[in-house]
Amino acid sequence: MSSLVEKKVVIALSGGVDSSVAALLLKKEGYKVFGIHMINWDSQLNELEMDKECESLSKDREYAEIIAQQLEIPFFVYNFTFEYWNYVFKPFISLLNKNLIGNPDILCNSAIKFGTLLSKVKRVFGPDVLLATGHYAKVISTENNVLLGTCSNEQKDQTYFLSKLTQFQLREIIFPLSEIDSKQKVREIAKENNFPNWNKRSSRGICFIGKRNFYSFISKYVDSKKGSIVDIENQKYLGQHQGLCYYSMNQRKGQLVSGQKEKYYVCGRDENNSTLFVCGESNRDKYLKKNYCVADNIHWIGTPPEIGREILLKFKHTPRFISGTIKKINGEEVEISHESCFSTSPGQYIVFYSLDKKICLGSGVFKTS
Image 1 (cartoon, rainbow, N blue to C red):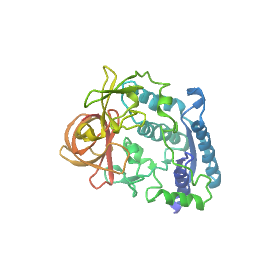
Image 2 (cartoon, rainbow, N blue to C red):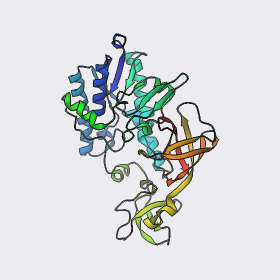
Image 3 (cartoon, one colour):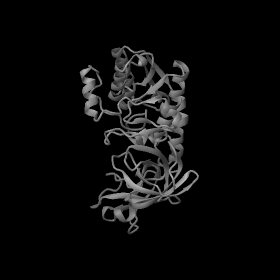
Image 4 (cartoon, rainbow, N blue to C red):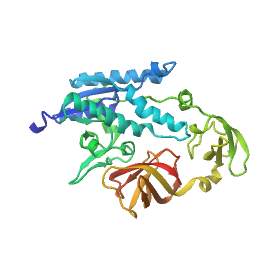
């Protein structure tokens, strides 16, 4: 334990229970801990009105500071509004304006939490300082590489959102919750230590912006064109949509098509005419199940796999893995055959895993299927 006493670590305190317990565990292990709370979104600057969810961001900061006081660790607030706007939000909006739905959470982790923040704490606290977060994931060191490992609880594993991390970043990271097998256990630890946020709901919505109505929020920033909703099977007009960028493949929303006996799912689009195609549930498999995909902007965390390697895939953040095989690699583009499943939308991330589900290999951006 004495060798760890002077080991410095910065914990990113979001105000949530996970990072709070992570800070507690680090201190118990003998680390010299510094608490950092990031502000990445200026609600007053970027929106006309502050709603309840925006106010909750201020509450997050309050919780983070209280936890730091209880643990008797130094507490700092860093404002990365400029960096978040330019490296995460603007690229997200740029994709939406091309009718592509990206994933700001993945960009936020790679560019802000483990990019901008990591660089700053290295400058402020010294090159030997490590960065910790409350993510459910593992860092696994091998002879040649540092690997991103999945946590023991598949339901809570967050490697999907960490799949763009690099070797350099992983060498500087600690995930204190990697061996905790349930969120309930985290809450129990927090309650035992009288943390005021022990029962705080998990965060939802766009990274660092919070949960809100997607359309009413995003419509302030994108130039969307309304169009027709059409049944792809019989070309019947079913209504009007607000803009193609608001609808992802396989999406089903109550307000999408009203007054119909059958549930409808988004299954395609014609961008030239701004037409959104939907299919009834009885035709869902016909139009939405795929067994092949192409991904570009490929990022491998460790050694790139070879053609013919069998892997597991995730088309979204879910406990379910999809079996697949790498068929072709062409620079940053990969072609994969996989078991039949409901695919995803262009712009979304496909994340790759080892067959034993223990290692996240990297990710790519879904292009076509």
